[in-house]
Image (cartoon, rainbow, N blue to C red; front, top):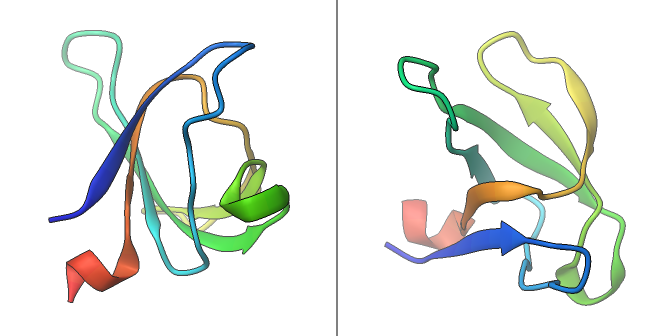
Amino acid sequence: MSSSTVRASAREAAVEARVGDRIVVHSTHQGEPERTGEVLEVRGDSGGPPYLVKWSPDGHTGLFYPAGSCNVVHETARG
């Protein structure tokens, strides 16, 4: 499985995503579930943020700027 882990800071831009990739935002609190969403649009340069993401399970969409710990799971890795 191909994924990129992000520990974002103001100086760090280590995220690259493409349309169809999944964003997984890891919980920072015990018992809180992960959030997952599908990248609908990439608005940054060279695959960088911000991303327009459709979040599961309710389907709401919003701009996402990575912060904290998250992974990008590339669509080709999901089969």
